[in-house]
Length: 323
Ligand code: ADP
Ligand code: TRP
Image 1: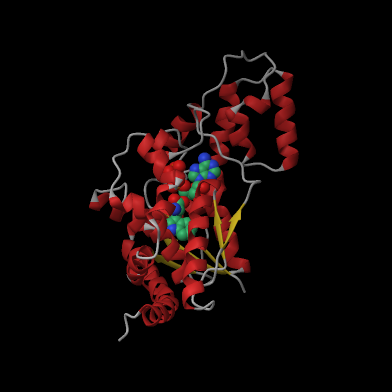
Image 2 (image 1 turned 135 degrees about the vertical axis):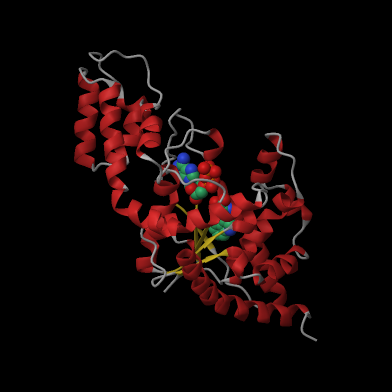
């Protein structure tokens, strides 16, 4: 069975862009692969520097995954920093990573261009990500397009290392980039992202959910006017929650006119609330009992550590750390 590995940073409240863009797919992988799923809290530290917030986000991200159906019996689910071997491997790989390789990374350059004052961690981010991937001998890493270059870095480092120390040192990972996965728009029509403040959160109060959905930006068409579904954020977001036939019917309603945006947003709000209703109770109960989450994560870390130990021992031996 292929080992599929994926990580998510606990850098904020999870939104439906995260769900449809990544979480749903990851949860499906537990049925058909040896899924290794982790919460990348070391990565999140490059931007989240309030300790209390990081700890809270870590628990909340774990609770969301568990509530949405990730089953710790079917996969290995842990928090990155609970297996500190990943840092040792990061250092070892760092000593073999040319500066130029990291200097070319768009993700780093983009953040700097946006005015973020970079720390060394942000620069070294792709090496830590490589370490996540190689430590667990991952075959496949499903990622969004924005992470494609980081996967190329991981492959590059793995191949060079294997050339020096033997092909069996690291599994060379394949990226899996799903081009069919649309970028989910936020309530303002830009990519939904916590950094743009335009999200619809998965687990929130009814009042807040309603506020976000009613806040979806529309054009100024009057109730009676025909509306273009293909340029409408309401249509794009609504489409995520319905099947193809219902989508066609919705498309016709848009085009026919006589339907107000307010009316359709109210329906959408109800639909989102109902969609996550079965998961909400589990989420709330986990958040009310964080020790239950910690216990699940500790067991996951113990499983992950078995795989990590095997790799790190091999690497220590190869690089002369065992003398
Ligand atoms: P954010 O942009 O809110 O900071 P992240 O960059 O932490 O989200 O993304 C975590 C995961 O969710 C990634 O796999 C990313 O591809 C996916 N994701 C985030 N936003 C969207 C979106 N608007 N559409 C599709 N996938 C998304
Ligand atoms: N950088 C990824 C993101 O922001 C998260 C991540 C960290 C990751 N380590 C990983 C993803 C290893 C896949 C494999 O989305």
